[in-house]
Length: 470
Ligand code: BES
Ligand code: ZN
Ligand code: ZN
Picture 1 (cartoon, rainbow, N blue to C red):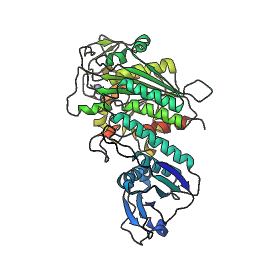
Picture 2 (cartoon, protein in one colour):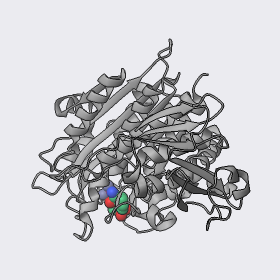
Picture 3 (cartoon, protein in one colour):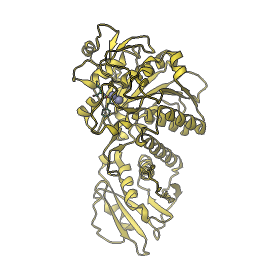
Picture 4 (cartoon, rainbow, N blue to C red):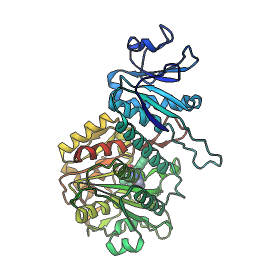
């Protein structure tokens, strides 16, 4: 899509007319009829025809509380009606705030996502120009919305991609290309380097697959200082069979999405570079395939890790915490960032706790929790804090190694995973873990099977923005 700014609406052409709940009066000058069957309810729309035969899409913004989800309205409208849009369409944006304009653009942009990338017949791309009518300049906000929407589409494509194609090496290549196109640095550590540097936990998880593990390190550092403000660490399991602690086969195909955390990290670094934010960030992706093979690591094994701590493996399906342990240790030892955030589709437990509407948030830093929580509400990618009490530590006791990767009990699974990760953060004071297993992939009105949601891009980008220099 292309976006333009216009001063006033040409009412003889097609346009989208946003309307707040029960506020038809405010836009009556544009209505071709006195009383359309429409009350502005959230995410509803009505097509009317103007006297020039032009289309007028009345779009419901709903109540004040719905404004955080405005992109859904535009997503739905575009998804259902854009086939009838001509080369151009206008949006009456004079009563929309900057935030609302941005969300409208994101909604229009994510409606362009094509999930059928692997079909032999490609869908054709929409080439509409969308003109926003507004008295103020809106270029910056529109660009921001467009870049954000494009990034969301790119990471959805990664998460929805089949696991035979998006191997760890494929993720590495994706990052190298993005770094080149957007002017940041990327290093992909492969088998030899991982062995040399001691990423033993990543290597153990990846042992059973012919698709060898990688650790991807991306760096965007526009500031004059080398100090890193924020480091993101993402779980990049390109397929989680469970390993020898194999998962049941029902819905196993969805375990291609076990790299949702990695996708957020890759996407956010690209977006922050595109937006040219003044902040130094490093993105770390720990990627492996958890496969079943004669060479797979086993329950009962004791493995080493980047930190030097030994880990007793109780369940090979608790693999995400292992690869993240190495990523977090690397971050605290080598990068030493001010803020450290990891994202992972880590546990089924968080899905049972919070369902599909919020990510589990784990941190001892209440200020950081508050900021993340506020941002989550505003971008409608919500988080909910879960406990990190010391009492849970005993679950991770191993008699024969420094720590074990699972208690063996199906209790407090999301917290236990978070406590395991904590053991590899050297008590970093600004560390946060986000368990996105319930929110990163799921049902959507735009696909028949479960698919990627794009969750996390706006949440983390806005958090980074809140810490960037003006
Ligand atoms: N990738 C899964 C978690 C998951 C479950 C993600 C559902 C998305 C949807 C993770 O590696 C896993 O298998 N976790 C186990 C841990 C257990 C063996 C300690 C779980 O949550 O059951
Ligand atoms: Zn697993
Ligand atoms: Zn997993």
